[in-house]
Image (cartoon, rainbow, N blue to C red):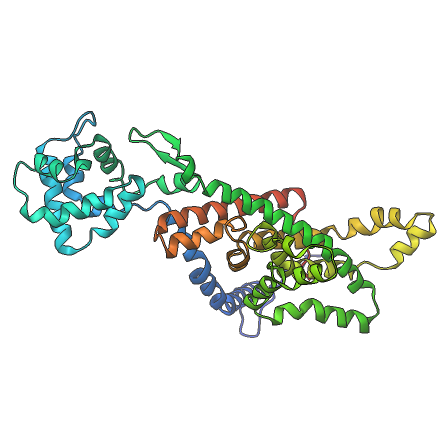
Length: 417
């Protein structure tokens, strides 16, 4: 007997069923994309673009090439062994004349002054007198300011004529380029950024450890107390979120200062003498105490979310098998809470690295983080390139820590709720 041919399944309008299913899947994907597109657009505008702009600013170097184009072109054939000839000085005079008329020499003078002290005054003084200068310009400029007669000045202009630079990254780690292009340390009295990086990392690690030590038993109580008691304790944990960060920080100033609440209590009960009050503010100790309190909920909540899923029968089973309380805790309960420890640890550590307000208010000179100097370079020194370089290094270090964390523990094991 011959077999009857298989008839393909079709929809009511005659379209093959497989084709109809593919179209339905494609339409559902398009609808899903349209639903999340506002969020994606927001992330691109508010997160991705600022990061790329920061990375670009850390290497962007347009000041010399755009303000001194004739000088840069005249220096292309310069051997760098002696002071340039008259054509280079004539080109510089013309560039400064044009820049003085356009009033755009401020960025140029600031950029060169970052690399060599005194260049701001040299450029501004020369620009004010450029209209009265007469050839030969070489002798006139050197007589006007001795910086134009120094070989290092011209090496600097030629080096910084490139549209890209690594000078900001070198300055971020207390290094600089010599006139001959060698990388050396900056003078000791200017070495500050590397120390601040190290201080930020180790203090963040201490703060993370402190929040773990204080938050672990609180999370344990939250997970094991009766519901009516745990709800009250949870309200106390969440209470700081309902209070301004600035208010919480200034409260710690009132508590920890020499004439503050804590010192007054210690003097009243006779623990310390009135003339030997503790200095707990405007130093590393004040920063650690205040930030531990502020970031403590970020450790408690991930720990609680994990501990709540651990059945109490596990510990009872371990006890029934002859395990002592501490041994049962160490071998049964504690390993099950590692995902919560990991989630809280990475959350608190990354948040503390990027904190700004609390170290600025309670840290003083010895308790400030590198983030405070990012703000300084953006708001006071106006060296945005250096601020971007420091922020880029900080971002890179955070990514490295995250990568190490993922390799050792695994992001898939992290539980935040």
